[in-house]
Length: 216
Ligand code: DX5
Ligand code: ZN
Image (cartoon, rainbow, N blue to C red; front, top):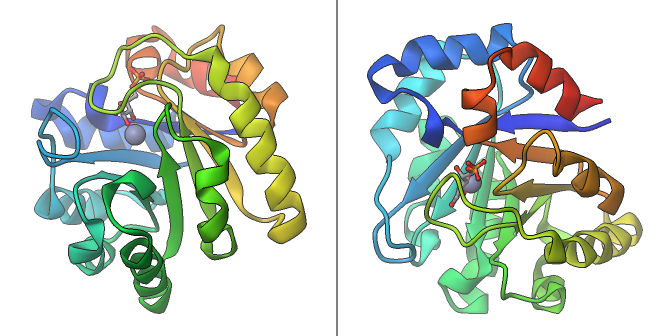
């Protein structure tokens, strides 16, 4: 059993409202929103006003993945725009600022989480574990949809799940990048509970069936 968080990075932005409404109809558990600033990652996507607009048209929880430099500067804006889960990269700032950002997110009544790039080891997450409702393990280099799944991230997923079983069993482990109708199984075996899928979800002929497969 897992949850699916379709990434709207692969949606049709001209028809974003239609595609987001369809997520609910197709049984998605979250809307995964990829925010990129052109500095932390070499791509620029969507920002605060778009998150606020999405908030108005769906009751699904918004899982907002910030791929931005020094996210502590903007977490308040994203929570106010309607994020339900706000995840920040631990590589994007000094540890004390990352801790401050997680506290700020919680103080605003939102769930908080950290994200690890592929080259970041599980151990780097240790200072933050007690403050996490979600830990996102990247299974591609952040920046673009449609890349190849990195199966060698699975030991990291399993290690984080094991630590969180002791510290906070309610914390969810999420994977993001290259999840499809084949790779989903290995993610779940490793202990991931939330699977982000961008291109595979939006390319699927029967999106409700695809969602069910990921959730199975
Ligand atoms: C990449 C993003 C992902 C991406 C996933 O930086 O964080 O959410 O949209 O896309 P797929 O599923 O196509 O790899
Ligand atoms: Zn993402």
